[in-house]
Image (cartoon, rainbow, N blue to C red):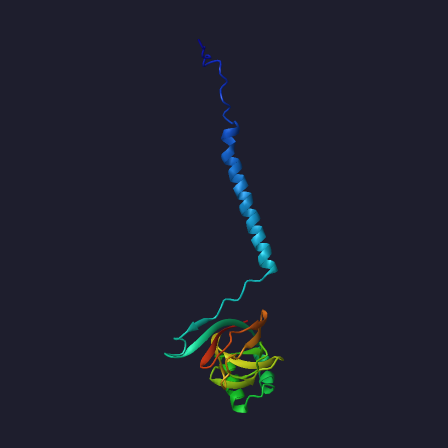
Length: 198
């Protein structure tokens, strides 16, 4: 016959024994994994900047039937005191220069410089419109600075002057973040830049 040990003779389990501390250790381990993952993600983002979001194709940007690509970019502002000299060097007709200066004095406009260039080497000529002023700009690998009258946040329309062919026109612009490829513009398309003045 087998004898059962006396219940009082058994060792009482330790309240802080190995089974009781496991949830705490699991919690600490999970926290360390989350912190390590966050640190690795931040290191990766600092090495590789976030990609520029793809342009949004919208049929409603300029009325029904218009095929408009949109993009938001930040460009550098020319100080109002420097605007007359910059406009004299811009090649704009004197009447347009006077109109822009009057708008700057009334604080309706800010003058922005947008260096634009040919990103893909396909060439082409585009029209750049802002604040009622349209300029024709031939694209080349060397940036050409276009002066734009902009409200605090405004739109700039860029469109091919002639049929760009199947490759389209691939403009780029030098923004406050550096050289930035803009969406490729094909026949019957327009690129609408929502410009933020810095």
